[in-house]
Structure formats: structure tokens, C-alpha cells
Amino acid sequence: MTYRPARRLADIEPFHVVELFTRARQLETEGRDIIHMEVGEPDFPTPAPIANAAVDAIKAGKNFYTESLGLPTLREAIAKFYASKYGVTVTASRIVVTNGASGALNLAFACLADPGSEWLMTNPGYPCNRHIIRSYEGQPVGIPVGPESNFQPTPELLAQHWTNKTAGLLVASPANPTGTLLDLEQIKNLANFVRQRDGHFLVDEIYHGLTYAPQEVPLGDETDAPTACAAGDDIWVINSFSKYFQMTGWRLGWMVVPEIYVRDVEKLAQNLTLCPSAPAQYGALAAFLPETIAILEARRAEFRRRRDYLAPALEKLGFRITAQPQGAFYLYCDCSALCDDSFTFARDLLEKTGVAATPGLDFGSNQPERHIRFAYTTDLSRLAEAVERLARYLGR
Image (cartoon, rainbow, N blue to C red; front, side, top):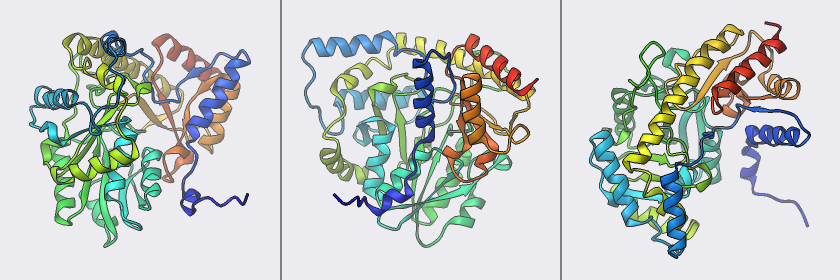
């Protein structure tokens, strides 16, 4: 057999953090103690009300195909969540339940990306997004961003990169790997820029709920990110049950779609995924219950405590945190004072200290060798142990 993959595969790179994770697991099977700070996955189990609701549904025989756009009751529940959480009216007809946020982005770009169309996104940014676009024959175009814009795009930056081939813009708030936020005024400014050029505007909000006040603000008085749904009903908004709701392995998300595209997305869902997981959807119906939210908010406070410990601890070791870590559960650090190449540095940390972190190479071509990402998705005692190991390795 002749090996002849599609040409687009040459533009799709491996997800380096997954390969690093695989090596970490291999070391664990050899008896090594590995502190995992590489994977963007909450370390808490799915809240019991969600798990119990899914189990009850399975026991009741509710394991058949659902509607391609998701259970009507779940779509209604998500619409009510937007009203109660954000004070925004989103009709249930615009909500599409998907196989994770990745499934949402696949449906969005299957719907919108023409061959050769260009899509703007930040560099650094989440790598899978650009690879999804390329899979549908679009061309991702990275906008280099840095501390001067809090690692987020601005209308001025868009003006420098928008061409007659540009079809749209994808942003994330909170962002991965930086944890930075866009406020509502910034979202509106970006939306207006894109509208004036008749483009598509997509906003990744998968870390909503996991946002925090500055370190000097008392614990519990946290910052909530505004939803792009408040900036117009022509914006594609992607969210997930993975992060705040801690359902990563359940693979369930949703997308708020402009009304005129709902039927197109439904046709694609019918053909590409048929429907989201039925047990996951029945479990998610319990995600918005008061008792579930109480559990999630307590865990949000724990993430805040971890951030407030780890950020100054890493800075004392020589890492520079140039992004304002307002959300998600990441610290994107400039490590150039400690190494010449963050990829080699990350491999070294794993092999010699048992601390797993993600090199900047995963997040684009904007000075990746200078940056490394630490996820505070393990408990405080393990974070303290990681800091001690790093200090010994660095001779601090």
C-alpha cells in the first residue's frame, strides 16, 4: 500500500502536550512520582448530582439516540442558564449541544470554512483550533499578541492582518494558554470590526465560570467574564461542560449559533456526529442545579487559592508571568532567564524532576522557545512539592 495522506496533514502538527503526557504516564509505570501540571483538565471528579443523573438515566433505559441538536430539555436548561447567569436572552432554538467544545468547533468550521478562506486567531493560542480549521481546508492566520494587549487581539491588530481572503475571527476569553479575559466593551469592538467587513466572529468561552479576581481581592469576591452573547445574536459562542462543570471525559459541549445557520449546523450534525452522548446529556441536566453549582463554586475558590500560591512562587524561581492570569487554570510563563529552549527545558523537567509542564511550542510560533505553561490542576500540597523540585533543579 502506498502511503498517501491528504496534503492538509502536512500542516497539522502533533499535540505535544499529549505526547508529553504519554511519556509522563510511562515514567509512572516505571515507579516515578510525576506531578502533572501539563494537561488542562480539572483534577476534581464530576460532581455527584451530574454522575447520579447519568446513572439514573442509564438504569431507566435512556441510552438511545437523541435529537441531533441535543435534548430539547437540555437546550432549554442552557438557555435559562444564560438568563440567570448573565441576564442575556438566548433562545433555545439557537443552542446546539455538541460532542465537547471540539465538536462545536468542527461543526462551526464545517459550516463556514471555504477552501483557502483565512481565519484570524491569536498566536499564542490553543493549537487544536488552527488544526480544526485546516482540516476543513481553511487557512489559520495567527496574530502575534503579547503583554502590551494582554495577549488578546485588538481592532488595530485586526486591521493589520485582515485581507480580502479573511473570512472571520476566532478569540477565546478566558484564553488558553494565558488565562486572559476580554471585557464586554472589547468584545463589542471586535464584533463591530468583523461586522463592518461582513465576516464571522466566533468566541470560545469554555473556561467561563473559572475566572478569578486579582490576588489582592478577598477570596470569594470573584470576577465573572461577560458572554459574547451580550454583544449580538450574530456571534458564534462556544462553551463546554468540561472545565467549570468538570465533565472532561464525558465529551459534551454546546454552541450558540446565529439563527440563520441553525439548519445548516443541524444537517452537519446529522451526518458528522448523529447526536451527542445520551447519558452525558441526561447527566448535564443536573449541572445547573443549585446543589451542583455550590460544589462547583467551592472548587472555583480552590483554583483561585492555587493560582494565588503558584504565581508568586514561580516568579521567585525566575519565571516571569507577563499575562494577567484572570481565568482558566494556567500560568503562561516567560522562562527565557532560565533556558534557551522551553521544549528541551520541559523534557528535562519531566525526566529529572518529575514535574510535567507544557512547552510554548504547542501554542504557536510567537516566541514559543521563551514560554512554558503550568496548569494548577493538582492540589496545593502537590503544587508546593513541584515548586520545591523546581527550586532544587534550578539551584534556588
